[in-house]
Image (cartoon, rainbow, N blue to C red; front, side, top):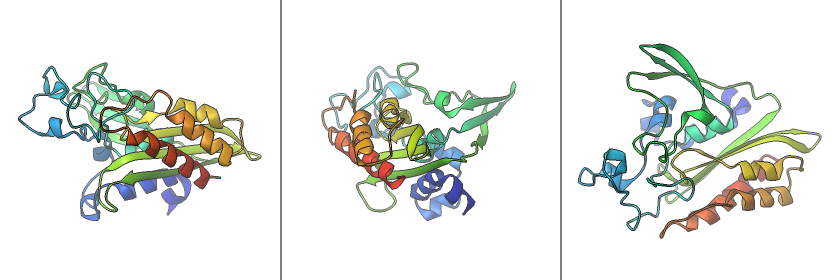
Length: 241
């Protein structure tokens, strides 16, 4: 109940992850660190970029679940529900290894394939994620939502976590993070800029939804994600009004 009240987006995202049976034995850290959702990566017979190969088979192949932001040279989407919420909530990760402990902000933790297609984050060999630190959410409201193909226990086609801090009916700060549309949890700075200084109303939510898809680069079979992003951004922001 405490997390549901103070950091609603995190509680909502964890509730959507996997099935009750899996959640009972899984960890939030495991959800954050899971490897990409891509059938070419998961199948042994395909030696893709993420396995040391020289090609991303989603380019010109089956790519309806793949990314519309931040792709290249690999286009596999980041599958974590919780990571999207944690980034929106300003979390940081404590990593422990032989050389000691270090703390990395969620916004710096995840890495694009343009830097290294075989990695999704800064966790080094021999390191373990031991803590997730989330700052106080006093003055903030947050929410998480996703759209799936199936009603229960399915991967999100698109997800969103939004957090806003308002004073006197005006948004002073905002974080809008998209999931399942990029190789990392994707922070939409343009959507945030469309909100700051505005009232959280239909006009602002619609403007943020439009801003959120600027720069989207759909692949051959996943342009539907552009519309889903706009729907989720608008819907989630209005739920915080």
